[in-house]
Length: 231
Image 1: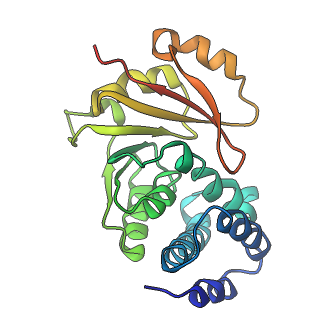
Image 2: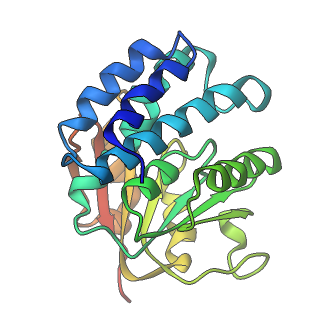
């Protein structure tokens, strides 16, 4: 188990353009984590993940070029916004269109008992996700390279207790297909970007949006949270 000192020393190995953003990220997250070995492990794994994303971004287009110097606060910290709303953590979660691993990998790190499935249709990004999970030792992560709508056709998984949707368009269509891969009454979380008109999103959901509500996460991100119908 890494020590607090190990986590503190690790930023010295980050690329210089990432260090300022990391320091802000570390301060914000440390206020939400209890001191001790668990916090040290969490900080170390999240830092290593950020370094991996930065290292492979050019080759795999993991994050936009302008986001790379702020990937800790823009992507990793934002990915953690559900961690207090979903407490206790779900037993399983499906990250739809995981891409570079947001939000699935950061949440798998802070929820080590949650089985997290990263669903991604692009082969190169799937390769990165598998490498990241392996190098970080995340035994609670499974990577599936497939399309959501092909559930039970080309891929199978135990129905999930929670569905995570970030940076994926056409939410009504996604929810229609995601329901098949979720347990009855499972919760879903949609990460709202800063320029998204929330009322319009909910209106377009129709019946799927009944009971949906806006939650502001501990790091300022807005989440639209709902529940799949049981019938």
